[in-house]
Image (cartoon, rainbow, N blue to C red; front, side):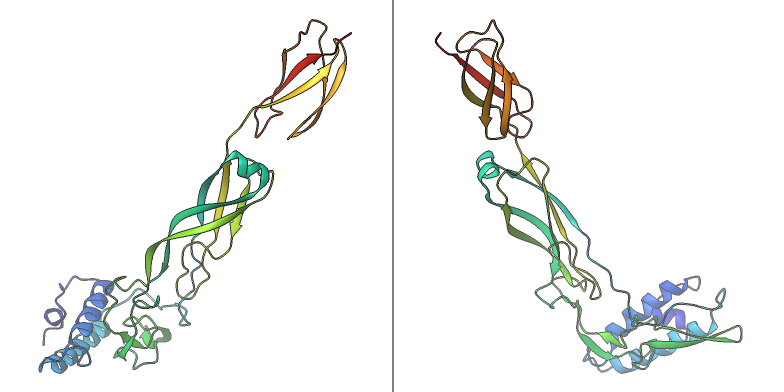
Length: 269
């Protein structure tokens, strides 16, 4: 038996290529998945070929890989911007944000594929014992990745990934007096975590437009008047040369960096 021919790889193929070829052959010819009469024999032939090549191929040194369970990976965060109109920013309310994220696949429940037949590489234990240069080490099974079983047919919807892009709409609260670049963090609303890891967060930045404000004030020339605006109260010095209807500008005292204009009406003498 030519193990390279059985697995369909070149004699110069590296370990990863051989491992992938065996996994593909094992999934294709496993009797629990393939009803063909020759499936069992082809499956055993693939197992024997892989064991032969793995046993003969030299490695640079002892493997130190942790044989524990697969590492959990936290989902990535999502950064988003949402516009807030001035009326909502002033009085408070809510806005709707629509965004895309990686969520669990509805076809397989996020698993990618369910457990199948017992893995021939580790006899279902998820671990392999490797003897190199007289040293014995235990590694996670290279065939099943530590699951102990070959997967059943991969989910066709997510192609064995366990995640799919989904469009999500979230109603976000806006506090009264919201300002441009105010931010909100929603935990667990980002991309889905992998291998049981926590989902990422959604970080939202509010974008509120600037607006000038106009207030009226009765005053006499040369006096100082206290004016009240939505953004606060300010003391304004009225010039001697002012006329009724003149507007005095207070830079950046309006809404979200806009200007505040004070329209003066002179008191009658």
